[in-house]
Length: 253
Image 1 (spheres, rainbow, N blue to C red):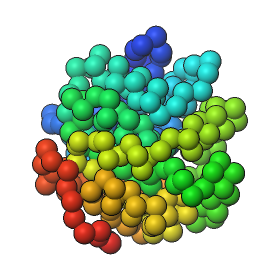
Image 2 (tube, rainbow, N blue to C red):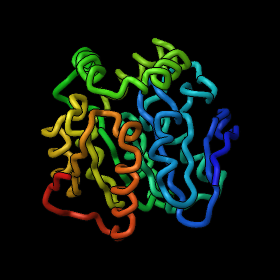
Image 3 (cartoon, rainbow, N blue to C red):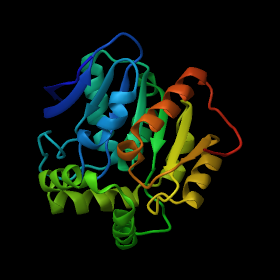
Image 4 (cartoon, rainbow, N blue to C red):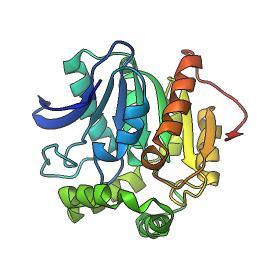
């Protein structure tokens, strides 16, 4: 089945959502900083069942609020949209900054979330805003250059003020403190060449959250460059997940 674009108004905000309807438990995909639903589509197309990829407020085709929103505020908007859709027990898949939004959504509204798959989670506290920018620059040469139009379009749509403000909010957010509060099962993914979510950081998150971490070949944007493999890992995890958190030895793939 094909994906369609639609616009919905929730909590006074106009959101753009790319969706594919089908029977089954829905997947909700949340994008990272300075991009949009477009960079999630290689993973979205490879996932089974219904899939929804909203553009966060101020990004992609969604309307821009006057002020910059942080992870909890973005999560509240997505929760309001899910309520309007009558969506419960969805499977969340976040990429980069979208992981922080997904975690906050799962904490605030556990009724909406059955599991989390977090790819390239930010923000490593070992790097402040300036070092995160340097890590982004280090990541660029390792990424597939075919991503450039998607990343450029996303950055132009968001604008520098919103990008930098969201980056500051991401760095202030303490994922290592928040993720242990999630009650749904969690799977962490990272690219082997990812300088933004390095192995030490994702391993620490896996330890404090009591969850599994899998390393895939590739760089930071594995949801774009390794969509079928991300979808396969997420689908396998969903098939085995239980209501309790899964705790396993860190795996490498």
